[in-house]
Amino acid sequence: MTGEICVVIETIRGEVTELSYTMLAAGRQLANGLKTRLSALLLGNGVRHLAGTLGAADRVVCVEHPDLADFNPEAYLQAIAGLLRSQPPRVGLFGHTAMGTDLVCGVARRLACPVAVSCRTFAVADGEPRYASLICGGKIIAEGALPAPTCLATVMPGGYKAEEGRVQKTPPTEIVAPPPPEKPARTRFRQYIEPPAGDVDIARQDVLVSVGRGIQTKDAIALAEELAKAVGGVVAGSRPVIDQGWLPTTRLVGKSGKQVKPKLYLALGISGAPEHAEGMRDAELIVAINKDEKAPIYGFAHVGAAVDVLELMPVLTAKVRQVCAGAAR
Amino acid sequence: MNIVVLVKSVPDLVEDLEIDATTGLLDRSFLRLIPGELDDHALEEALILKERHGGSVTVVTVDTGDVDETLYTALAKGADRAVKVVVEGLEPGPDNTRLAAIFHRVLAGIPFDLVLTGTQAVDDLDGFLGPMVAEAAGLPYVGYVTRVESTDGKVVARKEYPGGLCADIEVTRPAVLGIQAAEKPPRYVVTSKVMEAMKSATIEEETSPEVPAGSGLAVSRMYVPETGAHAEMIEGTVEQVAEALAKLMRDRGVVA
Image 1 (spheres, rainbow over the protein chains, first blue to last red):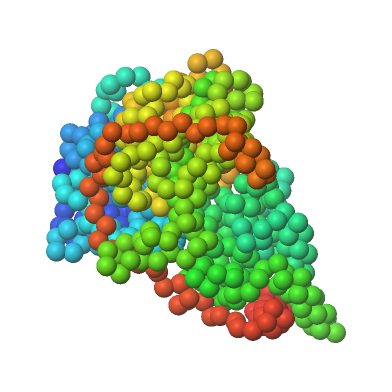
Image 2 (cartoon, rainbow over the protein chains, first blue to last red):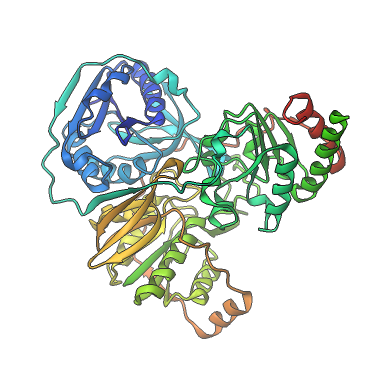
């Protein structure tokens, strides 16, 4: 993989994640721009058949071992660093995810190369690869070169279509044994904990009334519930609201929660940080209410209004009821 | 169990972020800094573990300006020690490579079983603090953790994946964990308690000898993305906005 583009494919429970295809699309662009090869690094146990959807890559390097069956931070780190140290890529792409962020800094240190995180798009200018990162909750974009000879990056969704990276073709695949670890891994996968069942599935709703930090207090959830009832939807929320314990984790929209695609997504007091955007930007109609006119959510919402959410909720509830009553007459 | 919590100061995103016209980078002259939100969750998880298993909690932060309140607040919440690391000549907004090297240096002088910090911070660009410190110290790292349980010589970290799925990962101590969310919302402490801590408790000041090298990652420019460009904005009073939205929902067949 020396001097090439390398994408570290992520799998969970025997399936390639959506973001892996986004990374392949990004990697393809970089490889074409730099006129080099794109390699996909696939780790796991009994995963070689997954190479069948990695056709965007020029080849797949598949590392199989029982210790890699489920994600184990240190075992994965040792395997990836061991491989890349002997053949350092020009650019190595990792997911900006629970897996990629555990690995990228350790691999970079062992390769003595820099890292750029939160990358959304890449480019090649004058033969040099460049990154554009979305930082500060989506309020700032930072751009720069990915320094030679090797640089690693974490990729967040939004910059490339996963479909572009999903190619149903098996590229030439090399099966390799993981390099012998320097020491036994001090981390061990024990078990999966299933998400709590029994609550409504927000991914199956036509209308979501989603609340963010801007609602300020737990009491405001009641206002959102009223509004949800009026519009025939369900209340969901962004990370800060869930972390405060104002809504159960089953209602979380975004990176670590659910990906939703309702007919209407009413975003109330949500700034639109990348982690949240990841879960809802494909909704058919996004209506955003946020007093901050510079909130990143206005960059991808369809309709917006910079008014106070707490003032708006009861008034909107009443108006929707009026409209419904009018329609029924 | 002795726990060290690493806290990083980050820009308060509630404020307007400006780009310095000459440097092309984030203007830090009027920037309000606050402790990282996930670092606050890391402190909470540390305090929960202390309540459960005994031991001590030490909060460490690098003095990048105005960190005393953060440290006194941590002491008021129940931290045993607060350490402010002063680094002569450290530029504002040091990158994570520098911060990780400074934290690693300080950790050498504090006995610990566990280091907790936020999984990430809003202004991360050259890596993440937790795994960088872990790698420098030769310790294992697990991030996106939402619960920590202690068993003999080990901890079990509950790691969060998308869609509400989690995995329990067993980690040999000492280790570094990146906290995504504490088991409970971070505790609130009233101002009077913080004032009390200011009088009764002390912040230990440690001087770090020199500014370590940065990441080598180049930032050629920063800019504020065009946000208003996409959404069609409805102007007017709350009443008018509600009226327009109700009609829009009706016209789109969302409500009937």
